[in-house]
Image (cartoon, rainbow, N blue to C red; front, side):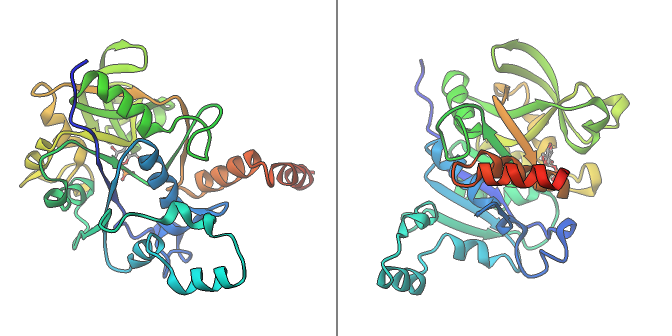
Length: 299
Ligand code: G1P
């Protein structure tokens, strides 16, 4: 197997206003809304860390500073907890080596492609990952990152070690839902890997090349930053990452990884509630109680 440049950095676009969750998100970033007792962003960061990624780059905006606070050392809190003999290990997942949490601001909301491009200087000249925290991905079976089996990004890094180039995670959705997503034109498949022949952002249902949608996880080569440079607006009047990736097909290997696991769309209220319920039911410390409660509620 050829040695690939390791994936050390992940970009998390977190500048969105979260208007779908107002008024909850008026003063709190939507990425900090908790699913049971971990904020949404924590799931994505844990998934990246499980995949061996060291540096987390947040593309933030105004009013999002609490995300950075979350990954800082809360000195007063820890001192008080220690004095009271409380276990500090609950905070382990929020700890980082100094310098490994980096933020950059997207000053104007011009789209996902633009948000990623804002991180170009920090990404530099190496392949990197992107995780959209709205998409909560839970690997199937057994141990793993505290949410089930092997996480989505780890599955992608394993695929990347085999094929290199660019990768997106995909899953199949009912045909009528495709126009909310990036959609691939699939080529040949081998196991969970499918060659990507084309990519289109939010196509009308009748023009969609398949029902395989891009589910918010990417491993991309740094050339994508140059492709994004000066790119025209696309679907929805936004600078689309999908358009930049589409332009790279044919110049570099491009594959899709079908994620072995479940995905919750936490950008929608029903998806958020579903994730909360599903993860609560699976928790050893509360699953049974929640199950009994759900039965009572359903009458
Ligand atoms: C973004 C991407 C889209 C992808 C989706 C996954 O869209 O542009 O290609 O399928 O995330 O959630 P958004 O949800 O920001 O409209």
